[in-house]
Image 1 (cartoon, rainbow, N blue to C red):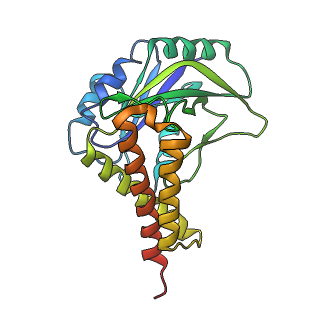
Image 2 (cartoon, rainbow, N blue to C red):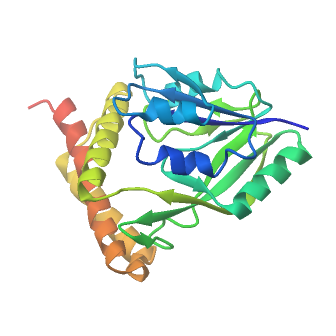
Image 3 (cartoon, one colour):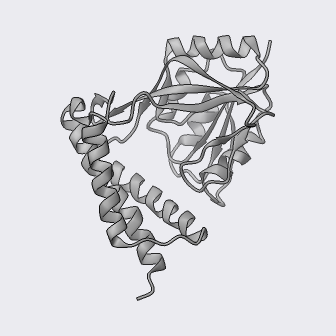
Length: 253
């Protein structure tokens, strides 16, 4: 029977980690957690679940941190989770079935269903939200992206969608959203700057307006109620900030 490891990269996740691990502890063979410098009791929680816990504080971006974590995986398959995610019963069964079939040249997408500010977001371009999170350990890996990292796999690979949702309990409050989005904006701007890209404030304005229109109108965010409107506004703000950050870094006057 093929084996499976849950792999995670974390930092100060004591609020969520136990609830996440509760959804996988009974059916995975190994839990690998790479910590980037927690100051809470993340390590103690991880170890109480029998996880293999490592630390690497020389942060070089999300992609490279996941690459390093994968080097510690010893199972045939790796399943990537974030601490604010929960594997539902239906998805757990779908994952186990896929691993048992052990199909060659295949990577698997999980469908995230996010709950934001107390409501499941089923529109706004947020759902369905299929992401590759399961694959044979020696077949694929994350790229070098600083942020918005993705799994890289052979072009000949078959991409299969699993059934069931991956429950995603993202932003806890507005402050949490702003802190997290600011970190993403900084990493995005750094990455674009390294690629020789530039931006204007007008770019920020037009992309922000476009973001709001797309999320709230074209992607029917209005069907997500007040949370849908709030998400569209916040996303537009975050879009402007990342372009503004890049402009500040690369302006010539």
